[in-house]
Length: 233
Image (cartoon, rainbow, N blue to C red; front, side, top):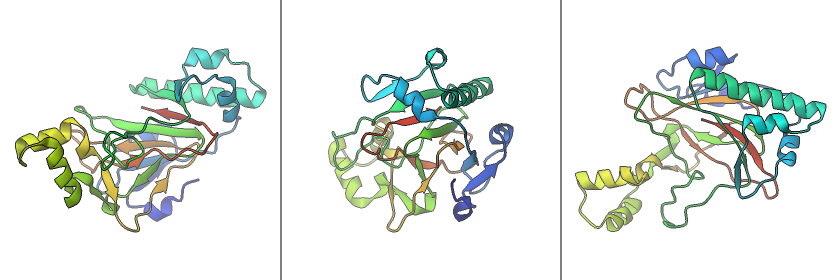
């Protein structure tokens, strides 16, 4: 379980899915958690799926076709239900088995992969939902414990060189076009918060009508030989 008491100003706990989707973000709260102790063998589902590559999307029809033990069936029903309730809500959930994500090695001083603390952005009002069922969980970071990377002086100097022009309106558009402005650097002594296994989260994102700061989050470093089972939308 996640220790929400340490971050009560940023995280709000709710008791069910209805509260998760209907409770608005206000003031400092930009992460909402429906804490759950799930039953069933979710690892069995990973074992039954052949992973061709680093990431595989698991569709409902594929889930239903798996031959599972009683505990595996319990896990499957939870996954199917989570997918369904989010779809009814209007979201587009994806269930992934993840060995590891692709890393951004093109810009060693400024990687823009999901292992970097970042925020999500949308032109329309929406939220990010995610749940880790197996493996290391995603992490969030209080906004006060990070600085936007494009504002770090030494990084900004390198970005200007990469842009090849003077700082101005064009430079800011460049930062946005290549998603540099979405990434953050943790401050000294920052304390990332693991989201835990089984909990369904709603995270605030950057959109025109948002009244709160977007939630900083990142993918965890996977353990060798252990795949993750993650729902995200």
